[in-house]
Image 1 (cartoon, rainbow, N blue to C red):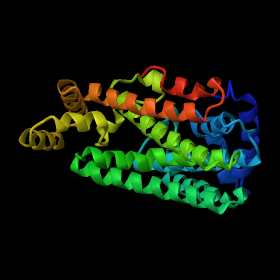
Image 2 (spheres, rainbow, N blue to C red):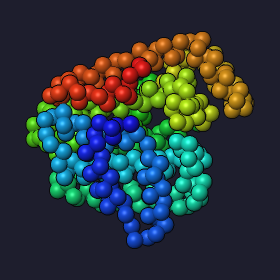
Image 3 (cartoon, rainbow, N blue to C red):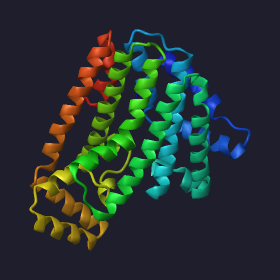
Length: 316
């Protein structure tokens, strides 16, 4: 999605990423190569490169280290997500669990996660170690909170935003803050980069919530309505439930428990339409896109460097 613009950076990134993820255990190498062959948008490494370039710096060895470690952690979480969700496909290709079974998936995910954390020392900066370690902790905490709340089929707005800050925005925050630290010692610019990552990550998750309801499977590269079917609580759903009186909300939640996945999806989408859940969610998304653009404008020395915002949110 971005390697047509960051050609030089991604060419170098792929070489360094292969070195970080290589193993003398053949099965690990085979699985990691399969993952690399069917990689996704590479959004997090792209952001790492964009931040470094936006600050007028040159993408250096430490910038590449950050890009590799962040992507390793992200891929590890996707592997574990597929196990939790019992997914058989990702981006139209069989998941690791489908080909090599869940035991191998868990261990390869653990390998990438632990390899990333053990390689943080390559940044030679204690503060950077703290930042990435904290992000890894937040990721797990956010995922567990999501599972916990999905059982009750309801959470309030504050809990939702705490959850997505942990499970989605935390790694974006770390990626942007660590990237800035590789090219500048200006604490204000580093903090603005962090805030950009936070608001970008929240906007990205809200966009994903919207796409799950109204997106196209062909455009997204994955089935829609997955969150609804898995009882995951999204922002359009929360806003719809918030507009019901307490009695109606309890009746609706109890009704969902007795419905099949297909009928449950229809019922939830009907309520989202009835209570303008999507309209409210899109308004909130726009506010986080605007916040992201504000911080990008403050750190960006070249207007061309806002290309990621344009590509990710061009239809919002």
